[in-house]
Amino acid sequence: MNAIAENHALLTRRQFFGRSATGIGAAALASLLRPEALAAAAQPSGLPHFPAKAKRVIFLFQAGAPSHLDLFDYKPELEKWDAKEVPAEVVGSGKLTTNTKPGNRPVIPPLAKFARRGRSGAWVSDLLPHTASVADELCFIKSLVTEPVAHQPAVTFLLTGSEIPGRPSMGAWRTYGLGSASHDLPSFVVMTSRDEVGNCGVLLNDYYWGSGFLPSVHQGVCLRGNGSPVLNLSNPEGMSRPMRRGMLDDLARLNQMQLRETHDPEIATRIAQYEMAYQMQVSVPELTDLSNEPASVLEMYGPDVRRRGSYAYNCIMARRLAERGVGFVQVMHSGWDHHDRIVSGLDRLCQNTDQPSAALIKDLKQRGLLDDTLVIWGGEFGRTPFSQGKIQSRAQMGRDHHPYAFTMWMAGGGVKPGISYGASDEFGYNVVENRVHIHDFQATVLHLLGIDHERLTFKFQGRHFRLTDVSGQVVRSVLI
Image 1 (cartoon, rainbow, N blue to C red):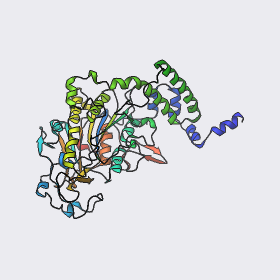
Image 2: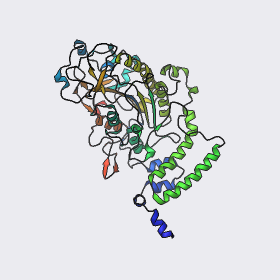
Image 3: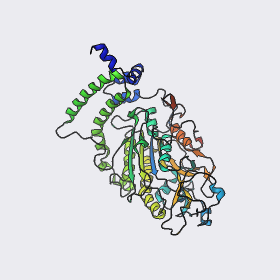
Image 4: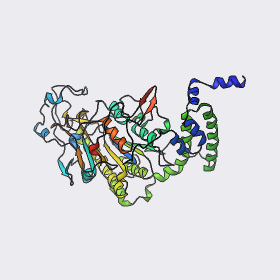
């Protein structure tokens, strides 16, 4: 084949459009061994849109849906309705799971005592004594609503703005818009854990931290709880660091040849990720070494802090990642899906998460990081005020999924401390004051990062997509 014919054979439709485009391909060629420049080339221009209050986000995601009625949204009226059928006019015609049957919805009162906490007087359950101790740092949003009633679409909706998998996650959007302040750690890191008995419910799918149709350089990097924190991070036996450096340099030159042909942004991602992995060979062992942490700090996070893969360990890792410039940390703890045995299950999950969550707030504050770090705590929806089925045994009863009113809290990063925003009705069933849709919540998070959610878009398949889809209003009443 002659040279001209060979060149035409290489020119596929995708390559033609790649060559016709400007931006990341050309920038990658000019910055082959500078991954931070590659990441910058993949970002839109003009960001942040305005001064940011938060430089970074730590999302303490409680997968499975914590019961707002037993933790934060105190409803004494439920005690009067104990074991009675919840009024039909309260339930209305909204969709529920098939676990709930009409005419068989006996009310469960709060499972623990509540008290007003701190100067703010926020209601917090006795199940969360450590969270209660930092109540004046928290902004409780008690009027959240979502659309899906099942776990997978609800988690996907909260984290990506769509019920259908495949859209970029919140952390990916943040990285796409603002890039990274760290040269040796990813800008978006994910850590997962679960309750020790393996409660049923939510699987932690990797598209919860995926990049969707954004360049894959923006997807979350998951640090594992067992074995090496990142697979294939260590050099094989017999390969020295200088040898690895030389191999990567040669590999980069080969990738450069392909990039020159195609201008495919995924090749630029490959170059950046190889270089990041090389830097992480040094940064990750230092990150995960707790030997230099004061004993008082480790004690603050609780007895499980040294066990890799635990929620407490992941919380202290989140603080260490934040102080090293990582822009979005997603800590996901599964096990909150209490369709039955909610009395023992909720107590166990609170013991797992209460002390580390509060310790993270205290730790960030004493290091001067809380003011520009947005911490979020919550799940994909709430739980019903009634039990599933007849109440035959308090030890066996549980609560069903509830998307029509639930609670999350936020702290630091430009939100007002010591306030409660919004309200549900006397059954904790429907929002009656200051409704906050999930798209409103997403818009508010982006706003705190200095991003106008309507302007951060990416054109894909002929449409400009954004995290908040086609709606969302910033909840300005919770902002400083």
